[in-house]
Length: 133
Image 1 (cartoon, rainbow, N blue to C red):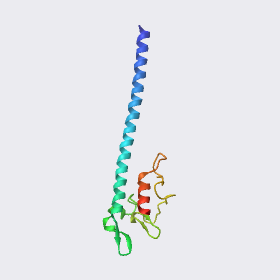
Image 2: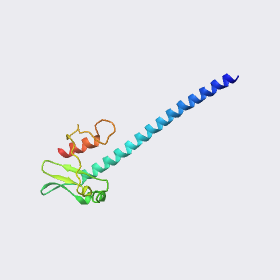
Image 3: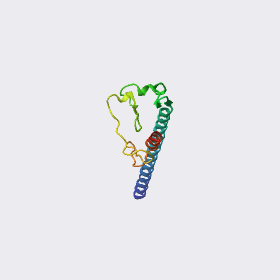
Image 4: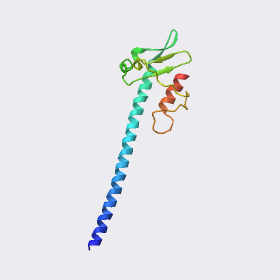
């Protein structure tokens, strides 16, 4: 009698541990996927706002700072950008005296350094390919 009860208890504990681990892993995966979607949407919005701030002026393409977010003007705000053309370079005032590292390549094959996985980052590739052309 005691042996059967012990086996059932061990089996129940084993099943509960397995179910708990599966639930914990699933919740972590869902949290990570949601966080990635949130960050991607924010980066996409920032990139589109930066593209909207570029206007064609009398001297060619210019950056209209009135259309930029105030976060790009505040030093060390955590919101930074750098736009590099062949002869024109723009950077956010929030960078202060710092420099953002250059991507090793421009275009659709540029890789993102912040991504945990070694996949191509659509944001870096999209903005560098759009701005370089």
